[in-house]
Image 1 (cartoon, helix red, strand yellow):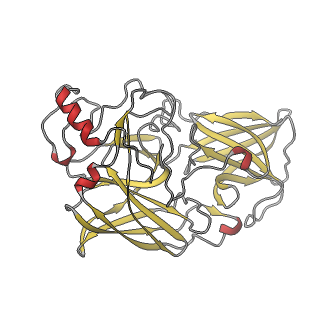
Image 2 (cartoon, one colour):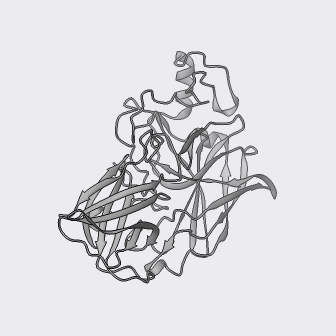
Length: 371
């Protein structure tokens, strides 16, 4: 795990309280230090950036995280991590709602699921956790699929714990809900239960790095975390995609890269070329899962193909949206229109909550011309 040590959270809390940096900051509030009383303030965190841009931006602060542990069962390996409890935004259809820190929240618990054979991070598995200590249940719930700038696709939620000690996080991984092709077609269909033990202490948590950003609100993203023990959830580089790359388009900061293969991956029983669209974030190329996407291919004003792109995971294409172009071909001069029909149904950490559909304008369709 890469840990930033510019300013840790305790230093931030002490200096903010001493300087009176936030008007109306109250006294101590549990382990979080103090509360911000402004409308946008959340306990222990700087206020949300004012005048946020309509897209990806640098958040008010950056938190590190600590490794809890790892486990493996069936087709899956999971890693459990934790950081300070923090705000995030849930997406339900076209509704975006902020989840604030509760008074009894001690940590933001995160889990990542990947294929131990290829290192491919697996979105859309469905995941729930039970946290136990000394055989007694501390907490349990389904945790949210999420996107963060340093970590990309993962699962997370805020949890209260029962003091310092040894905990067992029982991670229940559901089968992958997306279409699976190539060497993945017969894998990831079954669920698995994976126990992960970790040691927790409030003092260790308070040593996790925490720094505020002077350029918060600028159109950029914080760097990806580099963790030797866990793969990141990045999309393949454009020049690493198989097939012929047709081009890319930007829909509310979802970068949609289209490529066409001569034939469909193994497991798709259809004739003709295969159109694949890889959706990723700007700046750090994180996969964007769980959206709805349609494509229309037109030539000289006539439609030669129109249809839905299925969410698919493939060892060569990674997570993508794809369809067989049955009875159609792709030629130079064709127009390919990509129409998002469902925003990515994933929660967002700060810096992503105004992107990928979470705006008045939603995710507009985009057209690219094949060269």
